[in-house]
Image (cartoon, rainbow, N blue to C red; front, side, top):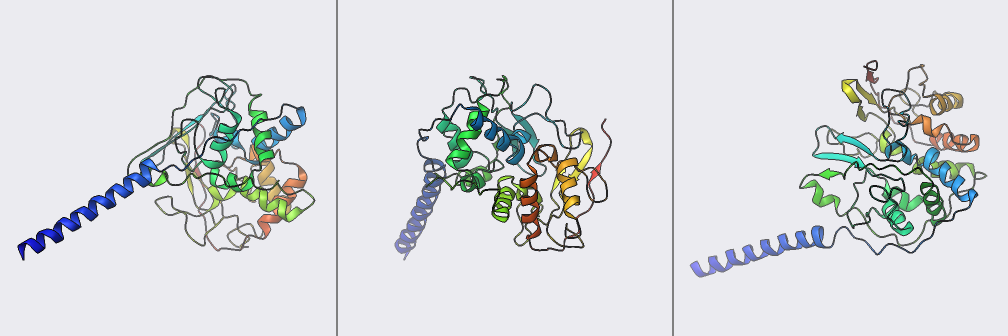
Length: 328
């Protein structure tokens, strides 16, 4: 009997060891899943650079996260001389995460000057850095892998190569265990390039693409107290964004088509004013909303984006007003 118990315990112990080994192998040896950076070459012509600039500044708004900004000013303008030079977001309240966005300027030491075009594309759409490190998914590579075609990606790189090099190392995002273990499983290789972005002539398709590529859901989806998205609450608002220097916090609005608590009662001009002037329907300033970048969208793209917002299902969710004090 005792031998039987010992054999059972030994078997259980062996199973536990195998399970732990499997977890370690899966998350620390096999993850993040990656492939060699693809061989790609960005164009250098003026048309490609101009299109890349449009995507970087006014659609994906890359510079809004990858630049030092002044969050005391509505629209979060870039600090002079810091365009694309990276940003330290600080620690996420109540979470073991310290977020830092990398330097996108062509500085050879602290930026992407030493990266190949394929390495930049892999990081942007597959979530794997030059050195094989998995990127924190605040960088919306899970979206870009589905929306940015090879042409889009190469035009973006073409523009980034023209930025003024700035020597600045914001550091890398740090995430404590066990969250760090599970985040390693998020990156994955791109199977095939997404199709080109829809033509402005296909208004609704273009608007849906813009809504995703501009990552509107990343700020406007409702989340719980652990910053996990709540099922069935897409675009319903409520996420808090602490502002620097103890100036309070901004709260993302409900941008569903609900007429009482969302933007269903907004006219197209009301929505356009939010995108172009950073003003809510009631005239209040919108903090943490990067409207200063989106205002540069073409009129056709703004119309398309508004059309896509109109089809977002209504969700009744009362969002309290932001609590922002004057700049200190």
